[in-house]
Image (cartoon, rainbow, N blue to C red; front, top):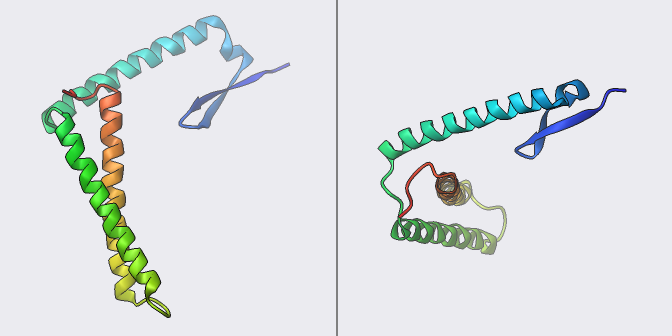
Length: 126
């Protein structure tokens, strides 16, 4: 009988392992490889990001969070204005709404990326 187990990463099964692959030595070798890979990724990110990003402090995080809140408010304000207009919104109104949404979403994504960088220890948070 063949048994299968999933290696789960990023909420999906990347590949299945057979029972033969699950033996202790192979699992150990795989774990050693993953540890080395993780250290390599950590070192690469630390080296690259330390040269590109300043130390991240609470003021930096606060400024970014406030800017995102401002963009969210602007986007929602535009959406409510479009909703109040009778009939089909104009192309210009929808393009303006889209521009505000994209700005908000992009900065929010950047904030989430910054959180990951800090959580993983890729950059110094002071």
